[in-house]
Image (tube, rainbow over all chains, first blue to last red; front, side, top):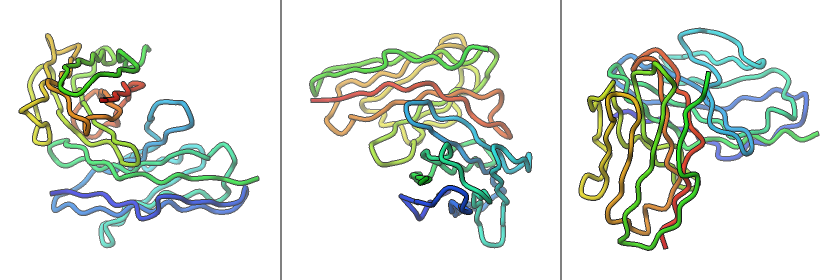
Amino acid sequence: AQRVTQPEKLLSVFKGAPVELKCNYSYSGSPELFWYVQYSRQRLQLLLRHISRESIKGFTADLNKGETSFHLKKPFAQEEDSAMYYCALNTNAGKSTFGDGTTLTVKP
Amino acid sequence: EAGVAQSPRYKIIEKRQSVAFWCNPISGHATLYWYQQILGQGPKLLIQFQNNGVVDDSQLPKDRFSAERLKGVDSTLKIQPAKLEDSAVYLCASSLETTGMGQYFGPGTRLTVL
């Protein structure tokens, strides 16, 4: 069975500092990886997908199949990045599995 | 475009009572998901529909939970009878297709079972 692990429940950085939110997965097939974000009092929303290799709001994530990781990175954190971040995996059949999330706090 | 709609937003019931949640996905989205999110945890997939057929319901407690997707559009999730451990946020999401696409989430229904 597939599994997504986000080892940090809480992450705190200062504004302007680099930030990396870790995501590790286990799945025997070829996964699709996603990052979702939930800002305070808002609904969960898609941040980025690994297949599009895009940068959204300054965030990037690279799928590392060797290390089975999909870490989310941003070189200079902003206060508005404070939110809950979830890593998610889709199997070949499209079944979704989410990690338990990391709460990011960016301090001024 | 209108987002995923869910109702009610909040529900408080006694244990052993029944409750139903409703979801209206984004127009044209073939895939619909129901998740249960317990406080401090990530969303857990309960059931996934492709149009009006079930793709996956392996984590749905079928002795008390049921779901249907009427005509491949709206969906309802029912719990009967509810237990204390069913207290959670129930999220509905939809996507254009099953694979390759991200999901769009509704605001969720917060259920409290007393």
